[in-house]
Length: 126
Image (cartoon, rainbow, N blue to C red; front, side, top):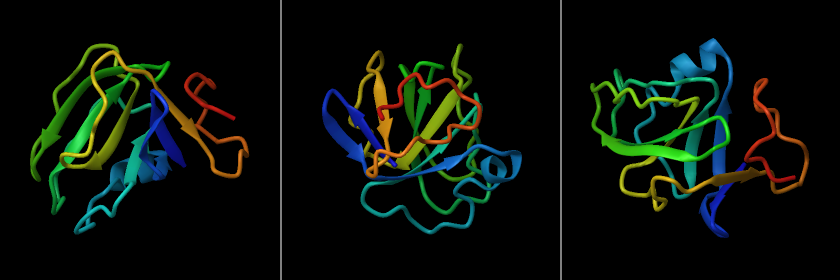
């Protein structure tokens, strides 16, 4: 999946975590994130970096994919609680080029519908 902000591609290899198991596992055990790689945690208002081996940028998103907050978290830390967060996008540390208030769009390179785990189609470009 691809994520864009104001026409700029921010990442082009985003995986979706939309179940308890995939959200719980998250990025644990990964040594690094490749260029353009990330994880979108659906229906997940907060995160932790326990058992992680790398720092990440956490992008806190509303239901309509508006950026509510951004922070860089080192391993073994708990992210801030940001009011109205519905989803969290995890990217490699230092790569979140968006600003608070921006709206992100997610699309699939094949233009196929994206399963957002029961989430509305807000923010999804098809």
